[in-house]
Image (cartoon, rainbow, N blue to C red; front, side, top):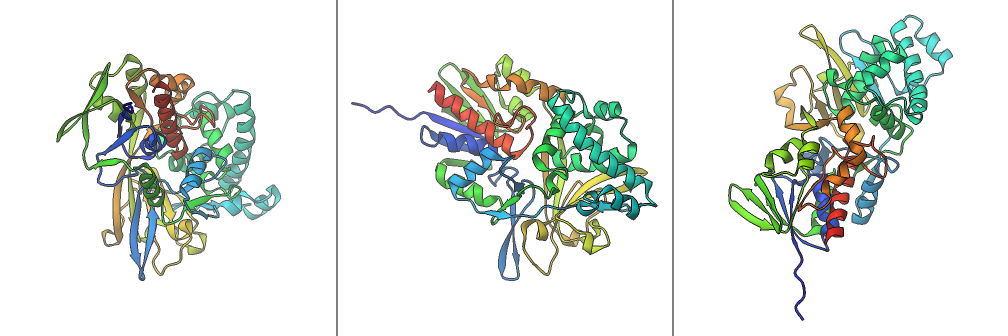
Length: 431
């Protein structure tokens, strides 16, 4: 008796969503992975640096995770045997021009200690009190569904000060979602509040969460995943067109066209829409709603991006500086502390630093794009997964939410991984 042949499935995009889909299809299909870049992993992008006779794996995008907020991803890491290195979170806010500086320790002061220490700084007293109020009222409003409005409108209704917005909200949110300050106010307040509920009031630098980094850098999990999947890999081969028909899908690159039974597209929504020759009406509806923001990340050793007082340096440093008469925000990750290694060199990863980094200190520069989470993207989460029902082309990416965590878990590595897993489940169910 002839055994049925496993279906051929193309995975377009080798970021966390595509790798997740491939991993969950590995025993049910013959898999080919297409990736336009020469490296696989997407935002799991590690630069391996030679330092004093050893190799340091330094991450430049996805860096930390924790079990409560990254549940599916952690189960994946457990299956792969990925080393999880403990990381003690802490953050520092600083303004290079005004000298205002505060962080984990200051926001953890009692009100009496804060009032005594900052008697001469009305700005910080305001920020401290409103941060406490935001995190207390925000949880309550989230549960009562009173936060399903744009963040700017939510802050207006609550009477929050400009100081709190520019020296707290902008710094944290632009770091978490990698979007410019002017787009932050369009975010759903519920999404921002849900993030802090799952990641601590300090966001990615919170201390009340069991933070972990991937041992050797996130490239370690990518290598283990690829070893488990065993796919045919077409790296450095951008897909230019995907045409879905009743009995299969044609994938086209500069090298020609190839036929598959199914395709899973793990690219950004706008890129996916551009690739699809004949998207369904539902696919077009979902993909056209997501906007993206481009960011520049630099791995370097220039300490001028940090505050002068080295004792203030934390793993997560949220900076503000005036450029051309306007305040600009950026993030400076101190990678020695974040990854937990010691070195004679200080390594930094800066996100959208508005001034010039000394070119002699630059190790690598990367352009990244991130989805802009607005009310429209959040609203479509309630039924977004039906876009994959009955189609030869399945979609996944961080513009989907993680079902396990609810519709406000969007834009994270957990969301990307979970969407790839769900796309694979849908495909397997149809097989």
